[in-house]
Image (cartoon, rainbow over all chains, first blue to last red; front, side, top):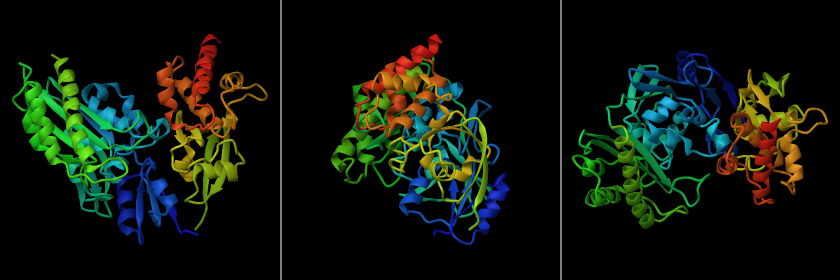
Length: 290
Length: 158
């Protein structure tokens, strides 16, 4: 009989007290779509489950000064229903909504997708290129951490045992900005990314790229920001030459593994293809705003 | 370890049960409340046989702890029919022969109800994507999709 207990604190401070005072292993529960699978398989054997969803603000989306604050445990379905968020950050929303089925979308959260720390997590490259940050709360107070700094390896994060992510911040958008996220899977639904690619850009008045961010998933031990690929876009309009530079920079950043989902060679090639396509979509979306 | 006492609304009625911390909502529905219509297929959120509606959203009850149900509103397959009168989705599944072995059927019906509650006039594509998390090894899905679209039409006309 596993000696597991469950608690649902009603404030962040209470959650931190419980986490820092726990005698054994405590696991945070948001949507549970990864945690419950791992509990069942025995991959994780916590002594205590700390449900974050009773804490006010953990579920919900609010706009602040043109940016957005997304509660850490907000389910994907709710993210997909937020029209203003979809308009400002279509790439973030499409990435979050790619995770699992309708049923999974009813529960799965950004904090869970990030802290499960899979290299293939769909929302993470999109959040990275969006320059999203996490507000992390712990015994030492609160710190703001860029999303790309959270995951340190497969299944590992930089959070200490007393810390939890409270919310995600998405910055204000300059005019003529847009993002896009694409993933490759061998079918249209219900699978884990073989490669994922996020692109976020801002165009100048003439339609050339003035700022860019590119990130890749499932081609390295963690999702990665690829500044060399972004540099291929800055200062340019999209043409075949620029797309070829982007493609090459993305492929050079790949350090994938061979596994049942794809070979090193295949993943590397697809990373180049997906960044081309995601960049094309982001340019179209940004161009439509003029 | 002590059991947790949970109060929730299930199929419109107040319900109370005791559960272990690691018990899933699916286990509690089946073993504590004798609501055995929700099925255990994969226990990993892939097959959708355990689908229930929690606060208006369809979820896998195998991926939710029973103790998390506290204070929430849950609809299961047992809540679809009104007495002996079948829900239009159930009636259309029969008319279109949208089931063979029937194991996936409760989950498909619950997921389809959640779709029609939200979108009374879904396209075939929307229906197929919405139901992508419900696996059926008998029907090949065509009859399921036709039954859902037919039920949607009937509900719109009613």
